[in-house]
Image 1 (tube, rainbow, N blue to C red):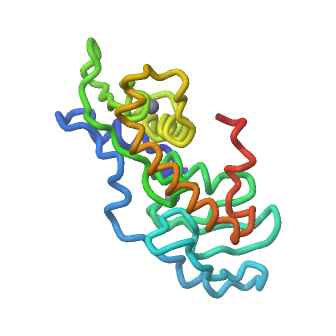
Image 2: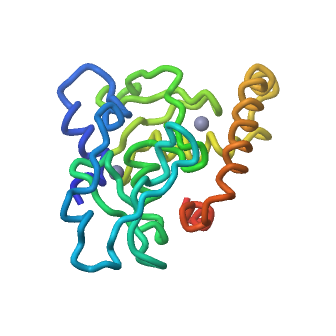
Length: 208
Ligand SMILES: [Zn+2]
Ligand SMILES: [Zn+2]
């Protein structure tokens, strides 16, 4: 699976360059639709169905799905080439979250680092400053599958550990956090009309 290892891509791509990795490079390109042969499969069970997005600009919800039950798949047209990914076992969720940096909860990209810097003593590694916990986090990693920043954002931004944060910091970011929480609540409410199958992340928190 060539596309699944964003870290690999970034490392090879940026090892010799002085700029930090572009975490959202894949989102700058147009999404590709399923190929014609997939749209007219010999097996009628695999006929893709078009579905509504949760809102205009929802980057998470697959526009095209096919198959049933445990084999139901969603199309990712951000991958190049595009591909079908199983929804039930969270393959689809994993690709969107950690390869492309799209939050299932919001349908938008995870928040970018407030600023970036080279790691002290290890200038090949770029770190980003998290707006939520104010920690410096490596943007990409050689070891972990998926982009380190996205993994952090998933854990930190959607489940902020407010009780661990110093009081002063909490107050300064309170408005933003509240606004983000309200936005998420609205999206969650909107998402209820979707089938749970489309949101396998609800069942997979224990993986992270
Ligand atoms: Zn993808
Ligand atoms: Zn954080």
